[in-house]
Length: 194
Length: 88
Image (cartoon, rainbow over all chains, first blue to last red; front, side, top):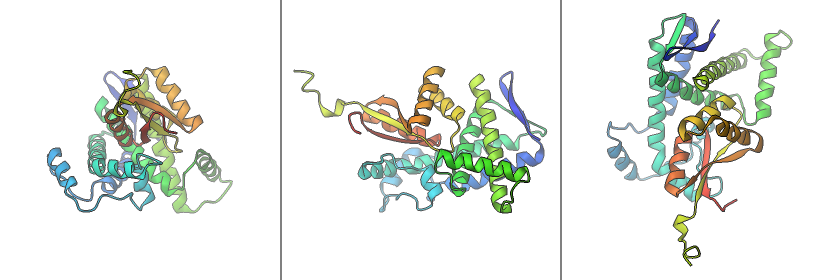
């Protein structure tokens, strides 16, 4: 059973067993593959920008609603402004998201269960990476409003208390979402206290 | 005269962050503190405005500045938009 992150000197230290670390690693890797740019970049951001400018077709708003939520339109009224912003930023944004998640993966690979110790940069990367994971999972679970979120939590509590039956696949997704939310809350709270 | 002649390009722009059911209140506060270097109280007030009013203006400035802020907010997983300050 995981225990919350606490500050220890320069580091944030939480208690996670090997299986819990594996769960987080698994969803982080899936998310990295999901957000990484479809066109591979070079290591030179300037060349990437030039390559992006030369593309025939502008990137469209993604048809997958989870990806669309990760790369949202930068205007709700002005489509042209949103399209221009997407054209200039989408590739870089996806690259940076993938790089942040890769840093979080590397940090978790160094974990020595039952302890997960993170320096400031690693904690930062994990908190941001978990946001993308939860946004995707939240979209798949149909969370569009605060009320959806409360209802989901009640359903899971009732199922865990044995009051109701849940589709096992849904129950597992909800349990993942709940666990990852707890991990993120724990890191963020510890960082705010720092 | 100088005020009346102020070119449109100088009109302030704003970056807005919109509420969503996934991002945690603590995380949103942390993002506002980390990216904008706002003090805790201001970051929390903005987070509560996003949560209870549905959106909040989180930064103002030139178009270039609020575009960069919008891109940074998307990097953090927050849904941000930018627009003219006198719009909507």
